[in-house]
Length: 243
Image (cartoon, rainbow, N blue to C red):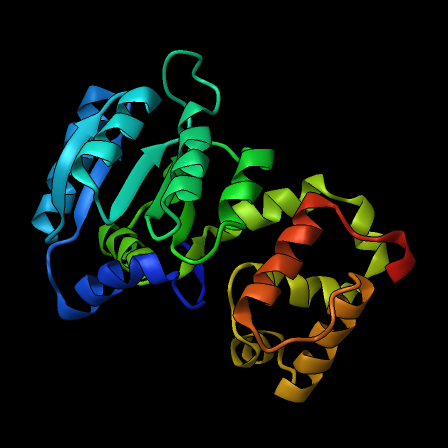
């Protein structure tokens, strides 16, 4: 369902990381305007050891519940009242600005470009999953736990659709570099990319270095820089001079 990007969690999220590691119940605020789906997801989370401290139906109530209950994790739909556009996603971005250690997973039936990128750029402990691709309950729960532990989890289909939308920067990269970057954006390590593409790790490292150079980002072992490179590409903010 989803691939992962691992990175050091923010200091404010250390409690969440300890909870995930030690198996303690993670406090969750759930936001979903559909009553049946909201109750279903709340029950599911409860069965897998999460504590749903609030389940709300709009973005205003979401932000209020986070302020009241101080959860470790927010699971939110993107389209919610009153406009049914991107209220949930915008609320998630605001919450991450105010509470950098708060783990957030956005659920959607579509890929919303601008705010999705801003959310994913906000550091470790975020996720973006497509509802119609959540077909395995245990995999979904595992994705939530990884986000609580400080990882970034992105559905590969989200990456693919954003790549399609951002066609212009593709011309900067070779076909192999595009393949490598797509896997980087999904959160794969160099070793995993090497296995997937039948390359050596040294070759993958060289491709990653070339990608960073073309994006005017110096090669760096920091995972967050890899995420930044991928998201910069998805936004299309690639300097023309990097060609």
